[in-house]
Length: 295
Image (cartoon, rainbow, N blue to C red; front, side, top):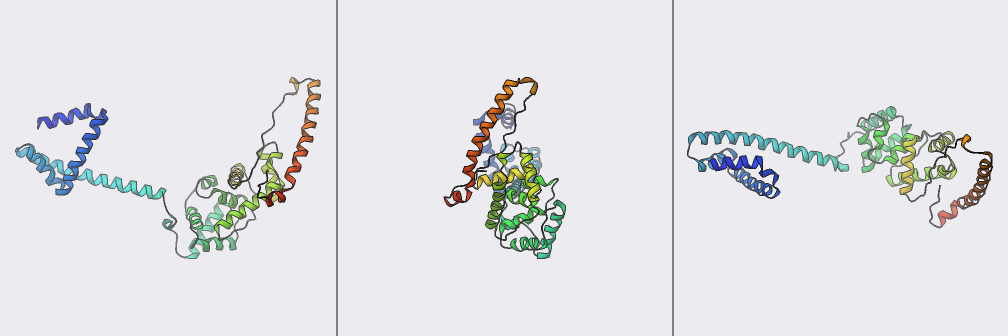
């Protein structure tokens, strides 16, 4: 018995720091617990301690230890169940999205979410999304995420199909398709039309470009939704050149000659820019050659 106590104390002080002994010790413990599960935890512990000593006090303490191990074993099982549950939450399938069976209840979920985050969906669009959720896993996921609570709309963008959510949030006039792949095409074509008209690279800043788009197309774009849609277009194979910003210049640090030289250089750059712009005029010809236009 003294040897057993010595091994336990030595392990607690020094054995844990040795990787080889740690693996050996834990494989042995795992084997002991396998035996205990086979013959019952309490009886197994009593049997092992009875082999070490015939002292009745030790046998009684073995019974007590067995109860403690039984409680610990139950707690570990609960932890394992919790880990499995959390893993399933991260890898949830479309069939696991729990939604009401009734169409009216799904419509109510969409309406409440639309009202809270001002998505500007009309009755026909809401009805179409609700009906599509019965056969489209992607639309079902969208309604499922609408049942959750978010602090701000940007938190909603961080999950799922952010390109669709940016489109629903930023466009006051939109087109909704029950087919999710068609919906991707709608978003692509809509934003492509805007970028052909208002190119980000023609503006000094992203904010200036966003203001120009909002003013002409009555959209509600902000920097997060704009950048989400830009990244979406880039993934779809388009080249979107963002504003690089203007370098600030202090007038007192530049003399008149340098200013004159600077203006001459700007005139030359304008001529070059106008010649390169001719390349982007023929966007339809580019599309016919399966080339994506630059914006």
